[in-house]
Length: 271
Image 1 (cartoon, helix red, strand yellow):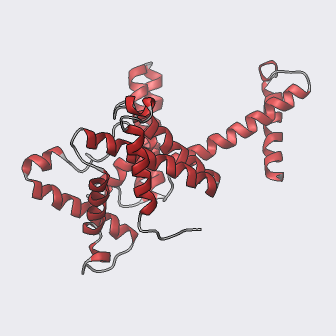
Image 2: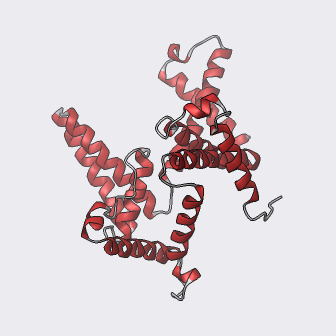
Image 3: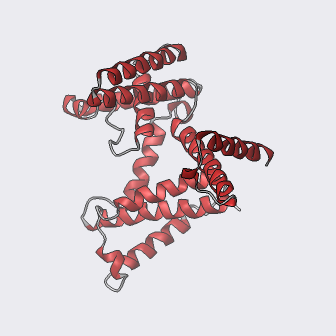
């Protein structure tokens, strides 16, 4: 059950991490660097997402703990370099959340979810302006979107941030029209036999699809994961059905493959 222990367990975790990194600590932990831990941060974040998608609270608790460990681990490595410690990390995000929610912690008027996003971006712009022209140039509206993000998620975040400063279609209809336009341009590039242009136009098409999904309130990354899960289940069903008659999928003709696929879809609906 949830408890309110005022961060006591977090402090205990920090002490465990410090022991692991201490002179008598774990050789593997002591050998790590901020750079060597990068893949673990990404992996743990994906495992959190997987636990959410599976609706598995026990797994989610465990994976959030693994992700938190990475935060504590890297904060301790940063402290060894004299940069900052875990308290600085916690205080920085606490202060940011308070300053960027004046409708909760200040006297700004209450707002809805869309208004909260617009206000959040406006506050960020004001913060950049206070940093001066150099800071504003260094941190534009899209500067907070990491290039290392998965493509669909990055496209979603870029679209959200552009929309927050007014750079967006007024309605979903405009985004839908853009899909049709980009499909036409893909076809034209294919007809010209220009591989580089085909790649560019397919990128434009994917971005347009993500924009339309965003306007519909759909997370395109989650939507694609669900589609891939469905495809994998149906493919495995068809593969096993073919094996039951002593065949591999590659030995079947298109009509037989379609029949197996339709059977897999019916089996899924009946579950």
